[in-house]
Image (cartoon, rainbow, N blue to C red; front, side, top):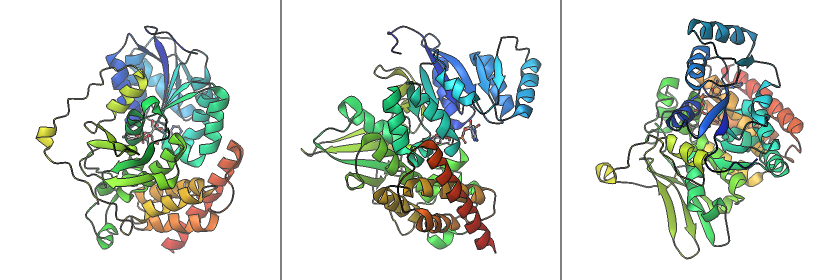
Length: 399
Ligand code: NAD
Ligand code: MG
């Protein structure tokens, strides 16, 4: 449903307790006349959810399980909260929270494959989708595209690089005359480390990103540069461009968020401080512009912006993602699933950092050939199969 300017937009934030979810609510809080929160979802961070309820008075909240429902009720009672609120945790609760006819906009900010089904529900219901959950697109690009077309949903990229590309494309889509899309990459915390040094890094070091403050999974992906690989696949699905028109450019300062080159030699770039509130505000208000709370960019203070080619030998995950993008079919879904397992195992200390790409490579080689799942059921089956194999690979590596 298209709202006229001036009308309040109702928003559901999937993953409200995460890094993107919290930044979204910070932008929403600056514009109470424009945005109202319909539903908040979080998995188990009940105390934060309770404080968010007091601040944003959502009509619904969705949590992981019955224990979390009870804890949230208790936390709200403890805060003296007396507004009417529906708290649920059943299987369809996330889908109801996005598909309700009162909802205009859905922020898809659950991390990983867990975000696929509610994001698809938003697509089918024709919502304006602010897409942060890149894993959903990587694992089910075609299925998601078909759901958006069938439901007449619109998608606005939140990932800073894709949001930048969107802003550098008139009308937001690739037209004849676009030669290349260049995704910038900070290179993460280990940009200058040798492979031998990388083998020794801890989860804490991997999560300490030099420029961005993010959830732990995407922080590790940035450190392996799998994040940039997933973003190449994301760009392919969002903008309909092939691998040959996509490039990665390492830019350690994270000020130029991405670039689009045209046939006439023009290169357009979007710049800004590394703060996700900028792409979030852009997508929330599009095609208008609103304040995000981000401070002005001072290029004079930064002084130097530098660029270099990525090193695929030290960052093999980037090469694996490129291979998966080129192969197409099942490969992106398989790689994403393997990576979710490998990253979780690294974060819990069961494998070393350098084993992440080895697990990913093994699973991709074993399961990456063949056609993509034609529907969500087939995608989830393949995801489960690749996860199971990744778990087995981890066990074998640990002996
Ligand atoms: P995060 O870990 O900080 O937050 C994840 C959110 O998902 C939390 O609210 C958590 O409760 C919820 N969640 C986790 N598992 C769930 C499950 N099984 N069911 C339901 N909810 C679940 O992650 P983040 O950094 O906010 O990233 C969210 C998404 O946005 C990721 O896909 C990431 O790649 C993407 N993204 C993040 C950034 C960033 O700066 N943080 C930038 C670009 C893209
Ligand atoms: Mg990004």
